[in-house]
Image (cartoon, rainbow over all chains, first blue to last red; front, side, top):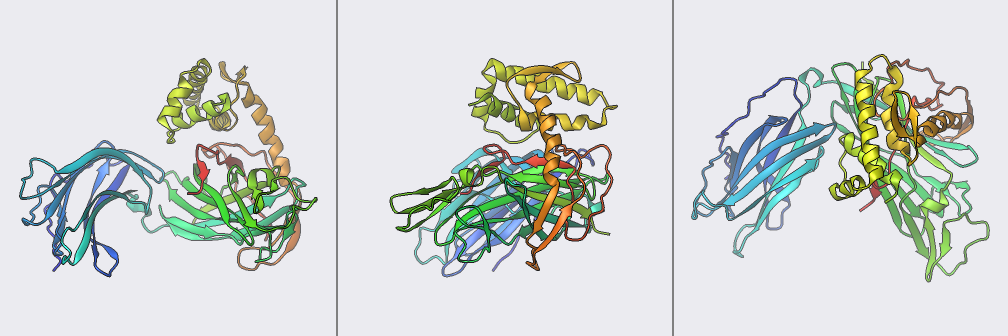
Length: 328
Length: 163
């Protein structure tokens, strides 16, 4: 049933080969009864900063859909979406794009969108932004809804298309006395590829002493995230480090925080990225009292015990040492 | 908002990072915020014009990391936050944290414990740009390498509570 229309209009021409570029993709997703939501048709444009491109997608609740340029053909019962994208900026893994979109019905013509707006959005690799969702009004329709979404990611330099980057990641916990505990991971990723990492948690007693991070540990600290490397023509490596810091109470809940840090490093250079203890708490229900030896940040609540990371880990440091190397 | 927060916000905006527009407007509505903006712009201009100062790339990030309210003459003849000077001392001292006894709980795969001693350290620079000169270091197996720079996630700027 599926068919695609390929009639891209206004295909962009790169103004400068050296300008930062991004690929903007618009997809139509459909949700069938008793099935998952799937991307059924999509198309995209490669844009340089400042350039615009127009994309059209259409679909209906019988399963017909297509993607291409604008205008785009569509049956009387269908919906057509016109998406005009202008690339605002590309920085590391963040693509900023201005979107002007509208939903059109053939029965009412292409002149007036029945819904739509203009928005500026920032997207990273693997992120998506939903522009529109249309629910079926007919109970016998095999499709529940139609969703239009946009994705964006930086266009990679073809010269580095098949390059791999090896990461040597050390997670270093250092208490206020200077004692360090480390974890290590060595993932490998492609050019511009978000590469996941995760470390075995650290475990702590309520007095702050290190304990095995098993189910009996009163407090655990877990770090995971992703790192993106992009080798530049001068040999340096642009890096984006996504870190997530989870604070867990053995018998209770989990709190946490996270963020992204970007920087440029030499091939093989080690950079330390320090995690803050600014946010996060956890707790569990218990009738026990707080031991006298407990660190600050451990407090009694009405129903149990609560641990607040900012106070508990005050004076301690948690760092991720990142060394990225181009694979030989 | 504190002056330090405002300075970080302004510096982050100048670095092209995404900041809350209303917060930025608020930061620039104060005389101190405008002073900081002027200092940051002059400093960046001075560094862009001076290609004979290899370590200079570290300075903007120092301001971002440790911006303070007091002001002092420094380097290029422009007025920058007094905290910068103190920051350089702090970051140089930070290298000492990498000295001393190291207890390893083992790598991600093995989970084994080891003990060793860190034997060298360098003054870490808090810059998002790479240093002008760099030599790959050799480290003993199982010992984390010594960083050339220390960067920090900044709560409220690039670090947020998990949703």
